Image (cartoon, rainbow, N blue to C red; front, side):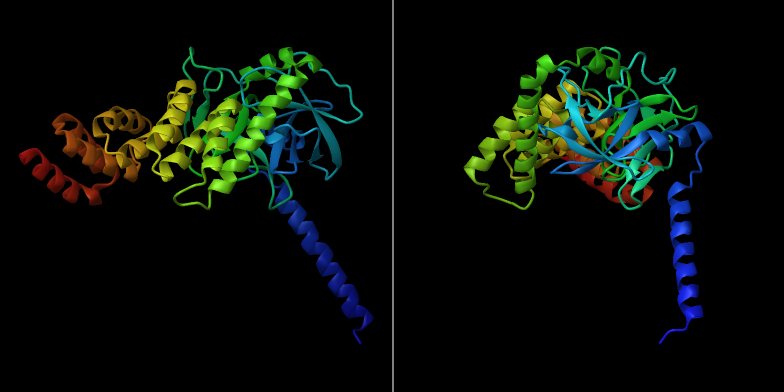
Length: 371
């Protein structure tokens, strides 16, 4: 039998571990105005996913449209651990944002949060960390690329600010704590952010009158996402009904992110015409998306459309000149179409960013251009 002292000692140690863990979850090395956003970020659970949301005012949360889908309600968890149900507020703006109202609240928004001035390059993502079960500030960016002024509403800010799965819907802020946007997605290298300027448009459009169209679009988003999930394990010869659902529902979703995923899925199945069609839809909404440009380049590469691939790779390399896959594909394209200027430009990029690959690339181009 354990002694009373041993039991007390173990209890004290357990409490200390919990205290240290809580302290680690609350630790924040960012500027104080950035850290303050942790109290405004919530976790969101739906029947289909776990994500984040950002409190705009008492009882009102902004998150991604693809998180809400067509669900009647979602569960939220705030920075204190408190749980509450929230319901979507319908709107008709074609952007991947949705508002939620916490049950039992009637908060209204006048101006919304302070928004960033100019185009800050250092931005921080504040999302609900599923591992820590608490809000967290992630490592800041070293660059942020903003949409063109005449871009469509779904054009996004692209930045290398760090984010993890489940952070979608979290706040993206500058060093002064001003809101830059809402995180939409990320692949571990590039995070995609919806500009905060769209929030006021969503607020202005919010009305119960839009419920039917809001639910219709949300249903298409959910069915598209479900079909893409089912498609993930299929490497070839997909069922025709699954192909039909992806084509129909993903197109109806109007969601640029789902356009990307549909394009990638069809490309993986070597259905190149379908792949290009969805990726063209995506690029029409966000012409400078690195992820979409790379997906289109891969589809064209697999389909041996080197002439069409060249301008796509040139646009991509202007954004991310160090990407080894893009550089390798660009060398092959230059050789295939005999484009010396493009080939030598790519070699210069390789010398700067991937010098180990230069000798093989030079040998390949010398042989290609000799023919």
